[in-house]
Image (cartoon, rainbow, N blue to C red):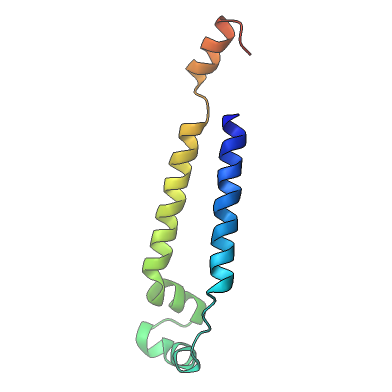
Length: 95
């Protein structure tokens, strides 16, 4: 039952996030787009535009995405049964 509730929660959150991002889609202004693509070498001293944008312009966004991934891994570790819980279940006849 706990697995079904967890799966339902994950699907619900995914659906809400997808709906919100679809409805509130923001187009990148041409001025900002042109600035980022033409001035990245002077601003960041990088040769690759993708690396310059990811590492300099979007550094905090990328860093917080990694933090969210780490938090999700720690959270999922809490849902998984521990080895001691599995052994205790086998000893009491629950498998």
